[in-house]
Image (cartoon, rainbow, N blue to C red; front, side, top):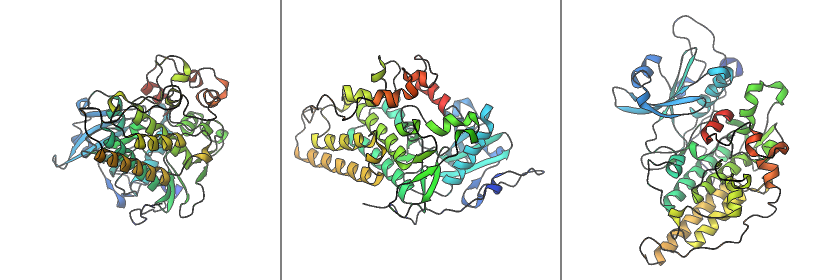
Length: 408
């Protein structure tokens, strides 16, 4: 199993006492590690974004707005993430410090590069990243702006994301659990190389030089603010591992594996993780839908070699196994996806093109899962709730982004 290089990661410890910003006259001294990234002034940010011009908005979420920023007299183009403090002020400030401290120390081809930050104003916290010109994987799978991604390009994007996630789990001195892997957090540069983004919920684990499982204990619910508990526990609806509904004080790397498995199914099927307009409950989550239908994205029909498809599906389904201990490590996921790509390339070299369709349709058994009977009750409807949206106080007409805003 290939292990990511340790040489590309430097990690410095920042004490809790240094995280608290001390008031001072003029430009306050930042508690964040300025020696590892650039500290922007608020004036620089305003000039770069034309005073946060709405025409430069790249995307919006429940806790931030991302702008396109032109820096250094237009010579540099970066993405500017403006955090919305709102009613969850303390939680947002913690997420800001967490993301800056993590990303300023990470350097990897498949991790979004942090350029710098701005914490000059008490109520305006800003993070500056490399600009990803091709948007997110979600945009390519479900939006209308881009043409459908070819199968091999989807595979390469998934392999890149697996390498980045494997690096977080095993390539650093301290393991990092991302905790919010989803297609919206896999960004693409101008070459469509995938980058894992958004580390606001990430947690630093133990030293990762051994093969022991990564386990991070969290404080009990009664020791944290109520307003932060849902974010801490869930991440994003549709990608949440089932065990997180049961044990709220422990997260492991296998929760990231589960989320990535959902991403793989999304890539294959071209279907969102959760669809509230999809009819009855057991067809709303992509895993339930795959269990019933097991249909790929219509654009991909006839374009995936059967050997590649079987290998890809096997690893995707193993990632979303209800039992966390039965899910593979990210290193195995990475190697299996690479093998799937090799099988596709080999098959492509041996088959003759017949218009758009190269391969015959592959028929799978009616059920791709074993021990699936209790999945809907235990995972989609936690705590005995009959409907998944009831468990999150969501209405069927809410959009996925609306629901994410409630959870993130």
